[in-house]
Image (cartoon, rainbow, N blue to C red):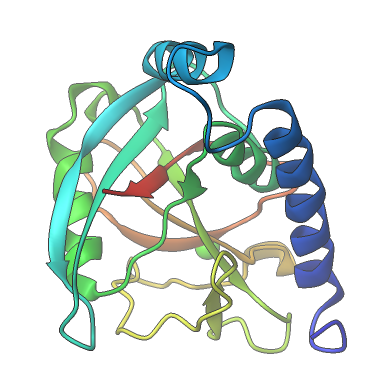
Amino acid sequence: MCARSVVFCIILIISTVFCDNCEQACPKISSPGDSCSSRLPIIKDTFFITLGNYGGDDKCGNYYQKIYYFPRYLKATWIEAKTICKTYNLELASFKTLEEANAVMDMVKRDSNLSAIDFLWIFLDGIALTQKSPTDWYWTETGEKVNFSMPWLPGQPDTAGNAEYYLSIGRFNKEGTLGFNDIPGRDFVNTFLCQKYI
Ligand SMILES: [Ca+2]
């Protein structure tokens, strides 16, 4: 795997290390009433805004449901966003189908917090593995290739500045159409979308 992409491996290593630290500090399975189970949901509700829920079938016909969150105030680089989602036992959002992608973009359109933002970009979990294949996109949480026709904005992905290998949904201005865009993720801070299965 490392031969395929140094960047991808670095991301996995960082995520793994962070996740281990998180789970040591606050295990996923905790007793009712202990400090972790009582504290984290309150902090999460303060930190995040709930975007909405989605339920649908994956490509194999298996039904799944998710809930999506975005941070109330914070912007972050892609790697920071990934680790922040992990902190709250969430993951950076990914889409199993085009239907899910369109449903989430409809939620973004309807959300009053996000609709007020010009030049809106929301980090997702997807990255392009190599600079030579900017049209090959993968979800880093599962390692699976994005397996639907991606609803790119016109002219995207454009690998602008030879530095755009992180997936986002958004638009260039308030009047613009929502869609996918490749954007920089190391020095460029954005809002981001976390998810959990329910
Ligand atoms: Ca772009």
